[in-house]
Length: 99
Length: 180
Image (cartoon, rainbow over all chains, first blue to last red; front, top):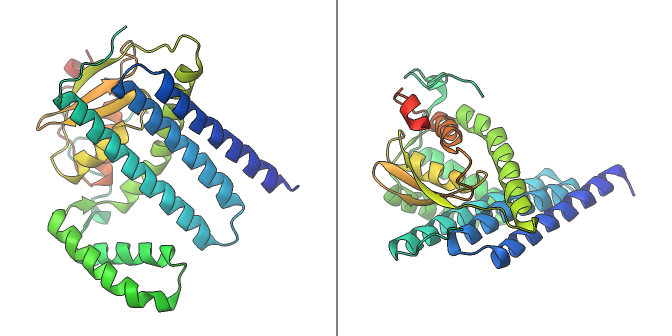
């Protein structure tokens, strides 16, 4: 196993851990707003790390560009949808959770 | 970051572009080229799609200025925010007590309405502990995961960085009353 393979593997595993954090947040956090926090932020970093790990194993630059494009489109969609869900929840008068 | 507030003199005014039809078509063509792995024969479909996408985007989004230099400067900020945001929320999730104290704040916007605001609202959701909940005419309503942390200075810094992406000079307003 080369150093590139090892680094790529570490990045992929770390990415998986962030996805785990996002999903656990969806289960553990108390209301719609806090759950959105967990999903948008943890999944953005998780996907970013997975894209970085895969890009290290890519054979040409076009594949790297394509991976980055996928990451860009996913975070654009997730940030937009998170905003729309939070806005919809506020407009419906869903109160934010307080301790 | 201890940069002074923008005082109406953007440093890279020369490189600011109006994003009209030509630039958009070029951007969509680049996207198609990447997606189709550079295959020449795919342009039979790609060219009409690029044309259509350009027309739709001109119909939906009015031209806005864009600074490539500002955008390149934004990328390291964005990666740093994302990493910190992800680590922060992951730490709270894995912590046995889930240390959160959510609150809502209104962040007064200095950016003009349009693409720059939408871009800011989207980026805010990736910052540590903030989620943009509603974009109003004067303020951005932000849901904060931990109300004990002052997020306004960080939001103001992000606003400055975003202003540079769009070649906008922010009005230098009194920062002291917003930090309270």
